[in-house]
Length: 264
Image 1: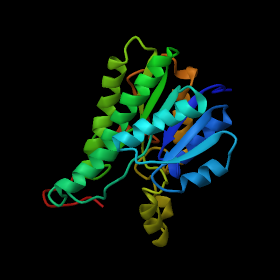
Image 2: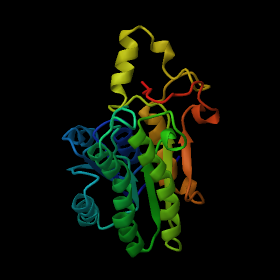
Image 3: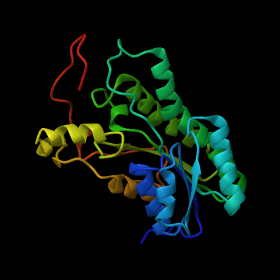
Image 4: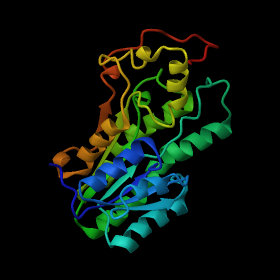
């Protein structure tokens, strides 16, 4: 069984969805976890395993908050081995001609600058300890090609895919691995409105119809991928974007957008 005993991990976006499932799974496998989120829902995550999980409220796209988050892990546990930069927002599905600069700035701040800050501060802290570790960032299949998210979201996640490659190179020689996970359609707080809409229409069987498994994914399935990348089971995986999407990205979309048309 995968073992994280003695490991100290930070998980952002841990108040719900993928982050919450990952924080709980890391703790189940022996890690001490700092669970961070911008909402107080992170306290509910910590309450499920208070001996192993500490809740911290922070903004994962704000430099001083991420710096303080890493310092908190060192203060509480004297060490850091894993940082899962999972926090993110969708920013909606408006087309490129309908989004404002301010909307782009906020989406990029959280989805791309947040992971950059994780690599910057966690990478330094782990490297200073000299024992190696793992930094994981949540990207998306939307970052691999267009058609799976709004313009700013898609651009931000494409940035994350390349960011972990840069991170792997810049951490060369430190024994710190830097990887991304590219989830497909997963039922989380971010996608709740889509799931609710489909269920209200009695079309639940259509969820995930474009991937070969013909279903949406669960947060626990992404958490399992994060556990793999956090552990020594993936000791030779570095600079990689691991796709977990039921096979969605193995093909091309079935339809094309036209100018002036917004995806829904």
